[in-house]
Length: 96
Image 1 (cartoon, rainbow, N blue to C red):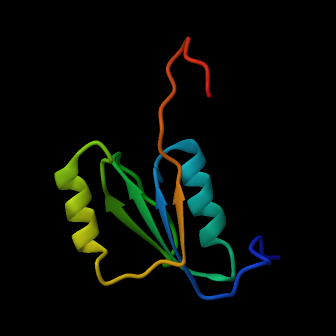
Image 2 (tube, rainbow, N blue to C red):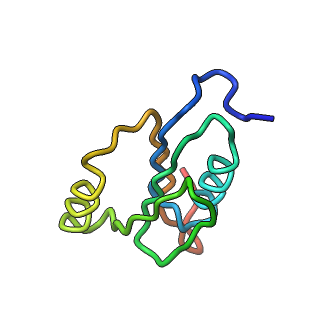
């Protein structure tokens, strides 16, 4: 069963923040979806995702050189969907 019923198939998806809990789950769900052809998992931390659909690319959104290198590595790709699952949370800090 697919989770992306309202979109056409053969999707290319980029997920920023792929090594975090939410981002990693997006990657896992997308990689298991029959409508998704490939997933570009962008993350500053070390990570590995099983399956042939996922390409891991190192990128730190706080580092311009890292962003430029990731963009260059993925410059041949076009994406149908982008998921941004970056952010941070500190104890004592309430989400807004």
